Image 1 (cartoon, rainbow, N blue to C red):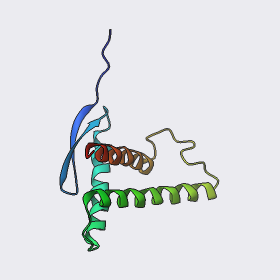
Image 2: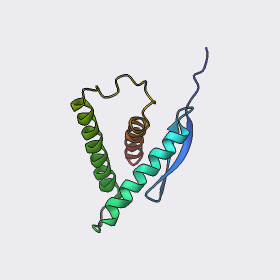
Image 3: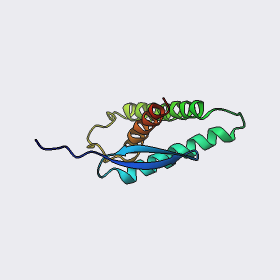
Length: 113
């Protein structure tokens, strides 16, 4: 029975906290970029002055990023382009970054229980 190759664990830092996440082969740079992007967005929310817990900051960042993604998809639709159409997965760096970011947010929130 052949064993499947398991994703390597990678430690990422978001808002000053370390998280160990599974990292599929060939995704290391994308994951690190996603973590950096998320951390910047979370820092921006934190700097607005209200004292919020990290969970609430993560949810707010996720909502803002989701809003940005939906706005970008709607813009593409208005231009007559189906989001993701004509580009294999991974060819659009923004789409790839947002996809990886979504996975990392879910993983980080799952780790916190």
